[in-house]
Length: 306
Ligand code: UDP
Ligand code: MG
Image (cartoon, rainbow, N blue to C red; front, side, top):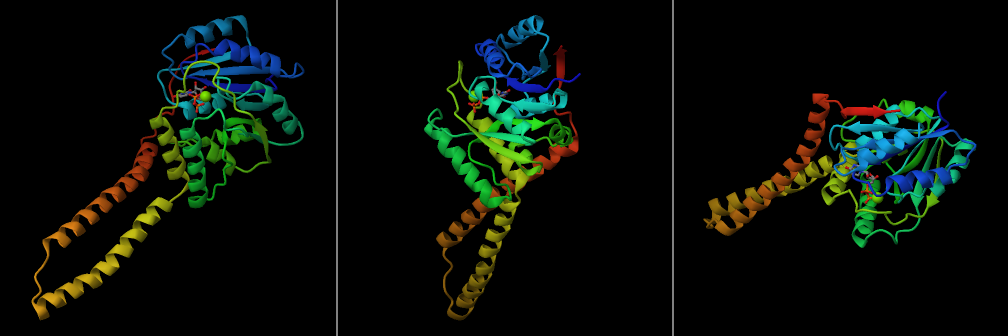
C-alpha cells in the first residue's frame, strides 16, 4: 500500500538539520495522511549518513538512499523521484529553508485537483544581495531567450502528483534543470507562496560554481538563442568587413595608400577573441550532447534503507 505523501529531501552535509527537519515534518503534516520521507544522501562527508541510519532505525517511514559520491542536488532529486511511490511527492531542501508548515497549503491545492503545486518564495530578505540579484537576472534572461516562463523564486520546493512523477522520470537527460522541465511538462499547475526561512544550521552547499552550472544547464537545455546570436554577430561583422576589404584594396591599388599595422592587429584580436567566445558557446552544447551520447548512469546508489 503506497503512502499518501512521499517527501524527498536531498542531503549534502546537513548533520545539524536532519533531526529538526524530521520533527518539523511530523508537526506540520496533518495526521490523516500516511506519509514517508526519503533522505537522498548525496555523498555527505560529515555525520549525516550516521544520523540518517539512526533515524531510519527508529522510524520505518524514513527511507534512505546513499550515493557513492556527490552527484549534485538535481540528480539527488531525480533519484528520489525514481524511488518514491507516494500518491503525491513533495521535493524540498533538508535545511529547513523550505518550511514544512507550507505543506498543508500544498495538500489543499492537490486535493482541489492540482497535479503540480509550485511553492514560490514571496520574501527575499533571507537571501544575500548577490543571490537575489543573480537569480532574478537569470530568470529574466531565461524568459527572453526560451519559451519558459518561470516565476522568479520558484526553486525546487513543490508537490507533484504520482501521475506527473511517472511521466517525469522518463526524462533521462544528464544536465538537468528540473524546474524548467516541470514547468514545461503541462498538467494542472498551481502556485502557492511561502516565506523562505534562514538556514536552520550550516552553510549553503550551492557553491558559486554549482549555481553557474545550473544556470548554464537551464539555458543550454531550453534555448538555442546563444547559438543564433553567435551566427548573427558573425554575419553582421563579416558582411561589412568584406565591403571594407574591397575599399582598402581599391585605395591601395588606385591611390597607393600604405597599410596600417595597428588597424590590422585590432581587427585580428577582436575577431580572434570573438571566435574563442563562440567556440566556447558551441562547446557547451557539444558537451551536453557528449554527455548524452556516453549514456552513463545518472547516479550510483551504494545502499538503501527501509
Ligand atoms: N544539496 C545536495 N547536493 C549538493 C548541494 C546541495 O543534495 O551538491 C542539497 C542540500 O543538502 C540542501 C539542498 O540541496 O538540502 C539545497 O542546498 P543549499 O541549501 O545548500 O542551497 P541554497 O538553499 O543555499 O540555495
Ligand atoms: Mg538552502
